[in-house]
Length: 223
Picture 1 (tube, rainbow, N blue to C red):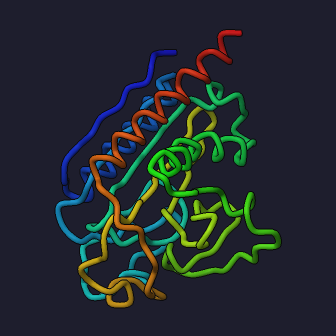
Picture 2 (picture 1 turned 135 degrees about the vertical axis):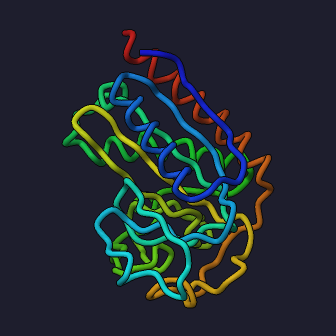
């Protein structure tokens, strides 16, 4: 098991972003804990692994197919955070999806809290949350959502892919208002609240919190 490998990229074409995230998953399957922060060079829709683009994307917008599941996400006004890890490093098997998800989403929750935003998973805050379905990620409500515990605002959209030996989490964190309304871009798109965030401060917090998880997990594995 190698130490954490983390990259911060600038604004890149959508397909290149997806290719690099697939490389993270491949590295995780080979025993590497790795992540990256990146942006998008134009407005782009990422389509979940089990969605059909022609049934989701509107207005002739460029789109990419994600390696992870979940619903469609509008990019271009967000910071995207991807984290991949060997399943064994997370103290789980490939069937323990909840354990894997909570381990990989942990740095996001911790980073928000570091910045003074009371983030939490929906299931840890709201009893009896009723899941909703939509083709648009931010119209969905789930117990797995990272939310503001005080306002209930969904802070990011997360999607997961788990293979026999590795796992990849992709998270879109809106940091400003979208330049086009989601209803013009994605079927089911609607207004969604967002938190105005400084990309540099958020990125630094994510890197620190990911490093903390890496150190903690390495210590646990070493015992």
